[in-house]
Image (cartoon, rainbow over all chains, first blue to last red; front, side, top):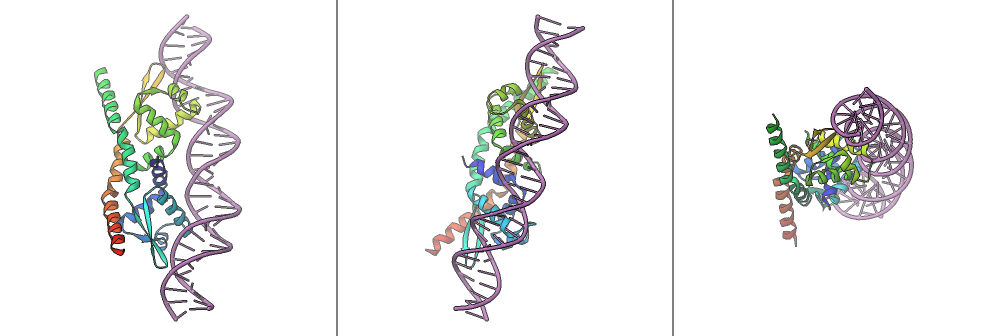
Length: 103
Length: 103
DNA sequence: CCTTACCGTAAGCCATGACTTACGCACGGG
DNA sequence: CCCGTGCGTAAGTCATGGCTTACGGTAAGG
């Protein structure tokens, strides 16, 4: 059921940018806020959602906190999508061949 | 760039239910509205979003209109997720081994 | 220590979007 | 040929959520 959290987490553009930036290298909240057009608390809130979706983890780094991406959320979403993969292919190809037959 | 549309489309629970239901069998708007806790116009609006994301297609069936799922949106999202797959795995495993080494 | 930096949370504001009812249009059946 | 059915769109309402400023708490550094 957590694929729903992953979808809502990645649906927001800002959160997606944060996740993409973390995919290149682990970063602290301050670093992320510096490269994002939103305030630092906003980044914290987004990181909370990303963490709840299993997309990132954090680790204390002295006074700061280092965030890095995690594969759990991605695999969760991937599994969900795979449920439709065969259905979508067969349904759509059947539809195409049907339309070809009509001409 | 259309993976963004796919994410926002599947992020909504009602839209997800509609998509899941269409994955089992093609249906008309009225049929979908009958099995959903929202009104028929709401279903139409959701179908518009799903169509814009490349997740469904429609086909006239006399007086009605038959909707069925399409693989384009799914493959689009899948490609986007694959960009992070290796990064997430390596970053996270590196993080794990680091924590093991610390103990 | 005491101050400074870094972060998370709370409270409040505002825009986006999901839903409803009302309307207009096309197709088929009687 | 008209009436009913099925669908899409418009307009309006209301809640959700993303953003801000303000506050509190913890950890290093002088």
